[in-house]
Length: 516
Image (cartoon, one colour):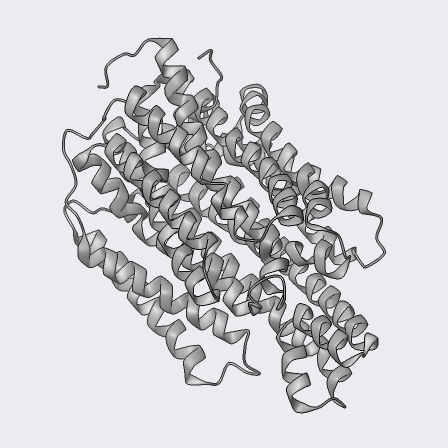
């Protein structure tokens, strides 16, 4: 058992943990708003859609693959030490990203930032679980989840201001100050909790997981760049990735002390809840990939205007976290979160009706409702998942939970971007058939490249065609993301189905708020 800490110190520790989580969520939102600028050949790096997928995907890949190893490091060397190391790596890599000279350097820097985030997230949840007990733990998790909403709210607005006044690298430099504040708080306030029975480092599992996820992501992203899936560099990496990940699961199941314990996923609430949130993040990330280009590219909003227009989603998520805890206390976990996830899915699908002239108020109302629903699901379900585990498994459980979520995010980046690329290319093909070959190739890469070429060769009709092709691709993507999120809602409803009095009482108790 962890020592009982004074409530005042518990609150300060929670503030440090919230800052750590806030930093990661803010950075993710800032990057999505920067896509349009990075794709610009003049103001940015002229990044292609595939490079933008990898700028996000490299971060998420490393984040997902290192998560369970980071949990084991925390159990062995202390979660405070791992958290501090992660913050330092994240800050240094942010400086590298800010001054990247090309898309390749940015991708590498983002991968390094993923290392820092992978060390931060499991340590944050483990420290929270050690610091708080009983109903106070559920409330603390709800507050921590709400920090995601704060980060989501601050990210677009801050990115908009920075991009309107400075060069694109400033959106990464902004991470440095929170990192320094967080490091000071970690060393001054946080005890160095660690498991009494540390898990061994699993280098074989690490190698299999990171190569498997990388191969799978490469194949899926490559599929969006070619006319068909027949080339060997498309299907072969996908097959190899699936085989390596299957081998990873088999090895972990045979291990006496696995760093990533697949057996935890066999538990009905823990496994089903994680699968549902993984599918939700899959859909959210895919939707975010086209949402980033809709306002700035197709609608012509400035970065600041786009940040303001998307802020209702963040406000909704910020309110939804603590609200979900209270709703679950009144009506229980299953009906509240199942309904909320269904509403979020329908919100994603509604973008299939959006066009170039849709009043922006509809965009804001949908994003507000969607953010509120997602906040309710994330906070309440996370509290339920962590409450099903004994304290000694806090690090392992947090690693499994975050690995599943980041894997969902990685697949959302790969699949969402690929669906968009294929649909866009099919939509633009008829409009570029009479253009020179080099112009055709650039116009097929992305709507941003097509608009740039249209301005150079003075063909405004090409820019209009690119806008129309993008809207078509967004409609296709919206339907797919809705179906994926609805699948998550179905999984969640089934996983949380009570099988007895003990199950029902556990679900009612996990999110009951208490004073901190």
